[in-house]
Amino acid sequence: MACAALAVLGTAMPAPAQQPAIKIPGPLDGPLPRFTGAPAVAQPLRGPYPPANPALAPDGRSGSGLAAGNGAASPYPGPLGHGTTRTSAVQFGTCASLAFDAANHLVAVCNGPLGPALRLIDPVSLATLSTLTLPLRMSADRTDLAGGTHYIVRADGTLLVPTHARTLIRVAVVKNALQQTGSVNLNGVLASGERPFAVAAGFDGRDWTVGSQGTVATIPRGDGVPRTLALHEPVAEDIATDPTGTYVVTRDALYRLQARADGTPRIVWRQPLAAGVTDSHAGRIHPGPGTPPAIVAGGFVAVADGLNPPRVNVVRVAGPDSRRLACAVSVFRPGAGSVEAHLVVAGRSIVVANAYGYDGLPTTELGGTSTGGLARVVVGKYGCRVAWTSDQISPSAQAVVSRATGLLYTLVKPRGFPDAWNLAAIDWRTGQSPFSALAGEGLGHNSEGGALVLGPDGSAYAGTFAGVVRFRDKG
Image 1 (cartoon, rainbow, N blue to C red):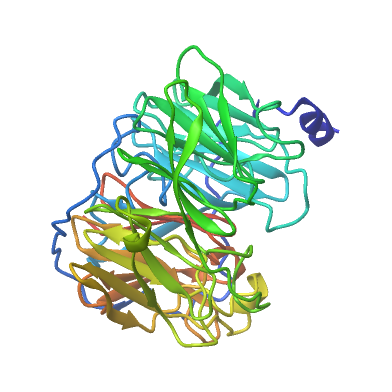
Image 2 (image 1 turned 30 degrees about the vertical axis):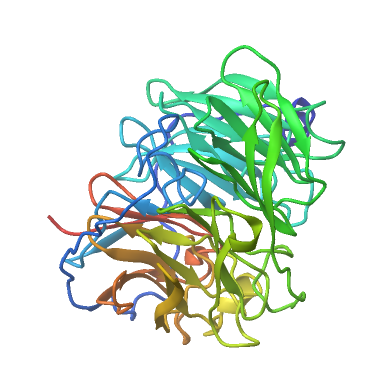
């Protein structure tokens, strides 16, 4: 009855206060090694990096993945392998988006059988301090991620969260509690049946949102009304912004958009992208290009297409149509390559993970796993090249790189039983993996599209199918 009432109201609802952490079960992790390899030495990455977005919380705090504008490159250090320990907590759903509030609490959107919820989590104990239940998903389709998955953290510490109820809600953290402080109703803004998929903070003084059917809208931060543009192409990826505009990936193309004086979005250019042929084992949630747009320093934006093997397409932000595509580099083995996780960008390098063979949770059970592989693409003066490849198998995690340590962090699942999930540290420069630390065994530790973020204290946090795992060096 409560769920039905929530669906009718379509509003975020506060849940009971603090809930103690319950460890994610790992039925057979007893014999598994807790650590393999040797400690690494921090080698900071010099960049360059895109300019920080003044409308967002500082890099590292503003959100996981690319919607926060940081290219999944965190200024915070991650574990170096010095007695790395782990703790975990059940959150009853995959935590696909993670960020931090001003008090260093972890903020997570977790989607489970009871629907999506926004949670405020103690960064050490992983106890849930506050929960805001979001409107229920209107579809049982697991590929339908519009609403209740992504969010951003503003410069003032408030959150802007798209919901299944066709709203954008504003949420503040007040005395260790999540409180909804406002809402933008998108009825009459989005098309009939369309829901907001993603939201971003523009450098132009406006917020931007895009609906699942391709309606792009600007949202004034003060007085005014939303302005829209219909692309008439489905959207299933986050959007990105930088001082040159807003970037949207549809099923068919990459767009660069800007707002007119009255806020109405306009198309600056459209770059077609190859969609490829649907493959039931491609590890893809939806057809079309496989990643959100990623801003690359030096005047580029990158996205992986839907071909097999996929290509990392690097597009010049400016310039004539004939020279817009800087390069399109194929990665992974023909017939066994696809991309679903976001691109990770640091400097003029892009790391991409192979999703091929991940057909869902059963893929990594009973000793199984996906095809795997990672690759680093470097954007050079005269084109692009693959700098290294790795055999690490990261079926679906949304990875992060530390600017402070020079290490990429992701959840990996090697072949073999028991089903061990590990945090792997991978050298950004060489592709070698100095160490890995056990996350846990079994279904609850499956990354299932969960995010990884690095905390101000040097911890790494990974969203999994059952909750959150924290990794921390001793001392």
